[in-house]
Length: 365
Image (cartoon, helix red, strand yellow):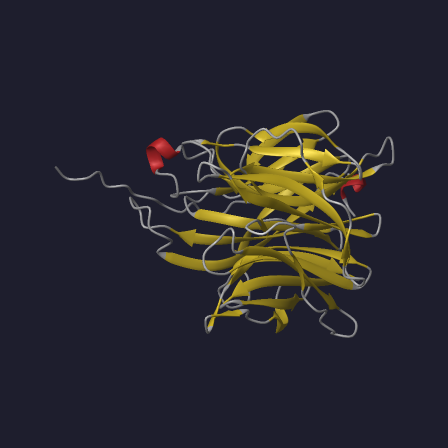
C-alpha cells in the first residue's frame, strides 16, 4: 500500500496586535546560516550570538537589524582531532559585558557533557576565559542550562545528570550563583520536588514583582523522556534560597527552550511550541511554532498565542528589550516530511520586532 502524502505550506506573514504588542513579522538574520541565536542589548547596541561549525560567533546589528560586524567569540573545542558540539546558548548582561552560557559535548552526550560560561567586553573587545562547570562526582554530567543576572549578580542553571542502577538516568534542575571573574561557584540549589524525573533545558529569565519590588529568577524546563504529545513546559521561581510557585505554561505537545523578558507586571515567554501539531498525527519531530505567552508568575495565569504560524520546524528562540522595542530571534528548519530524519533544510536564524502599542508606557523598557 502507498504511504500517505503529507503536504505543508508556509503562510504569508501578516502584521497583527496581541495584548498590546504589535507583531510585525520577521526576516532572516543578516549572518551566515547558523543555530541557537541569542540576542542582547548593551548600552544601546544590539548583539546576536550564533553557533556554527563548532564555534560561537558574535555579531553587532544596527537599529535596522542590518549587520555591522561579526567575529568569532568562542573557538572550537577539539576532541579526537575534530571540533565537538557547542550549542544551546543563553546570554545575559552585566554593565558593559555580555556573558554566554552553552553546552559542550564530546563522545556523545551525557555523561560527556559540560556547561560552559565566557564573557565579552563590548567596550574593549576582550574575551574572557571559558569557565567550565564540572560535576562533583565522576560519571555525572552538567549540561542544558542557562544564565541570567539578578540584582547585578550572575546565576547559572543546568541539569545534573546521573546514572541509575537500572541503566537509566535522572536529571535535577540546579541553579548556582557564579563569580565569573573569581572563578567560583556558589552552593548548588536543586529543585527537590520535580514534576518529572528527567527535567530538561532549564533556561533562565528574571521577573520583578512590581508590588513587592522583589526580583527573582524564573526557571522554565520540560521533560526529556516525555511520552507522545506530552512534553509540558513548566515554570518555577527561585528567590535566592528556595524554589517556589511551580506552574504549568503549556501542558500539551513538545515544548522546549523557553526564555523571556518582563513586560509590565508580567513575563513574556517565547519557546519552541509543538502543541498545534499533535505528534500522533504529524510525527514527533515534524513541526513546531514559536509560542509566545504572557505569564503572571504570582497570579498563576497564562495567555498563549503562536508567534510564528508557518508549518516549519521553528526552534531555539530568544528575546530582549532594545530601545523601547522587543527584538526576538529564532531558528527555522525544514524536516523531511513523513520522516524522523534530521532537518532536510536549515534556513538559519530569523529576527523580528514586537512594538508596544496603545500608549502603554509600562511595557517599554
